Amino acid sequence: MSTTATVVTVLAALWVGFSAFSLLRRAEWVVKPLTEYGVPRSWWTWLGTAKAAGAAGLLIGLLVPVVGVLAGIGLVLYFAGAVVTVLRARSYSTVVFPLLYMGPVIAALVLGHVA
Image (cartoon, rainbow, N blue to C red; front, side, top):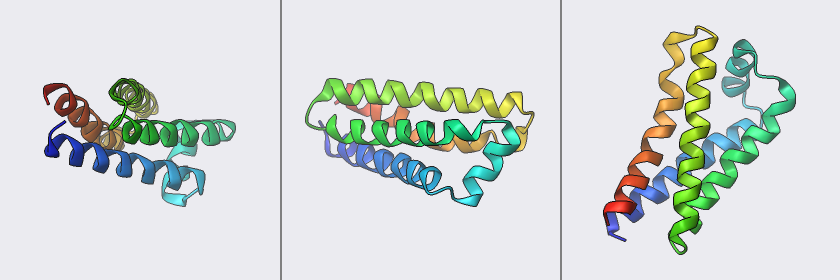
């Protein structure tokens, strides 16, 4: 794996991990929009855990590539679901936020595949 792919993967994992931590800590700037989108409070811990597992999977993927690929695919699907949730809530001005998390994950997948 190239240095660029490694750096992008680590940064993507840290970025997604930050998102997971923020959700699990119930940061107001995270949970307020979830409430507005209609995401049930009972899902929040599961969603945060899924993001944390995906971030860990990206890092594990540096040593076991198949785990990183599976984690990356899972995270892309997760954030695609987040985009759909935001669009269904008609919060068009905030649809960029899940894309900001999805982008680095896609970059890590692409760079890991190319390397």
